[in-house]
Image (cartoon, rainbow, N blue to C red; front, side, top):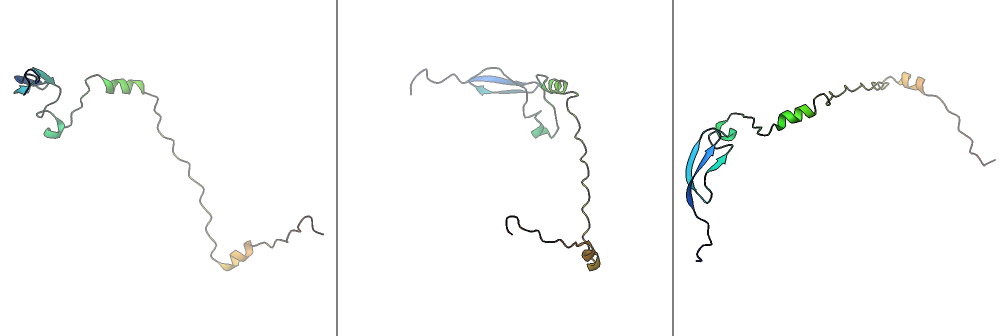
Length: 105
């Protein structure tokens, strides 16, 4: 194995924003994280909104008043009920005369 190829593997601490400190070994020292297993919603079962850069407020401010509620759809006219009585069907029929074809005499 070659010398001085692999980085040093030293003891380090991982510190979370919630105050949890984990002692372990790593190639980096003093790691700071925003979420750990003690405060992550998956492990705790609690919902927690994480907005470190103010993105939610910036989004709400940008689109405040621009979003309009959808308009209600106008009701389509109801279709005419089909005639079921034969007399009503026959009354509505009109006899059309056949049209004479143009060009023939």
